[in-house]
Length: 254
Image (tube, rainbow, N blue to C red; front, side):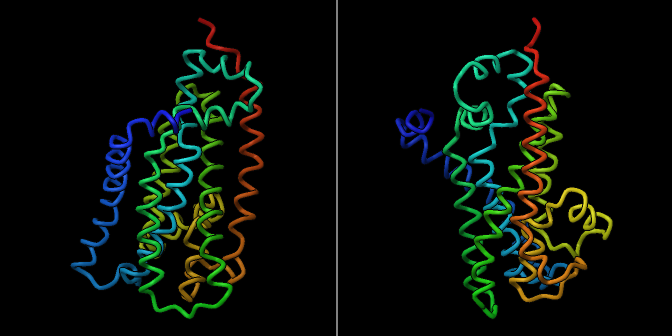
């Protein structure tokens, strides 16, 4: 319904999608400007950073397109409009994700994908079958990891009432951090995004394998293939937390 509504005004849709694309492209423009003044950043070239940027931007864009509206669950909890979703014969999480589905966010996916494809074309990489297969696995598993964080954040809003910004600090904040090489961050922070909130498996860990670089994260080479397992390991507790939040829900009370 929301897609049909959006496509009713096609010019408006194209303009807003282009606006989303241009807005998200400013992040890469900032990176490009940095490289106008330095040849490397943390030991990584522009093309290598572009791979990191393109992978996480595409993954985050896919998650935002499909699950981005879960951040609005707090407002539905406060005004009691979540009650309407509870009486429909459709999973509540699916309804929350589809609520006011914003097709314009497709522009962010395309922008990240353009940078990713450019990086893959210009990089001088020894393309083995394993590296070729790892690229789509990295993007899709990264989207699943971001989705798990979104669902966990939405579940937390059943307790906190409004914690959208806390949720965004891990999704949007994590996306911004992963656009840069791990070598520019403190080791404690890098360990945190490996062992505490494993966002490093969105792109850092598999991308280092694709680039054929020595693992600066201290992980074995086979860890590059753990992203799907990490996604499943995060989605399972996130789903349980969501169900626990729904059971706790008692309407607005007003």
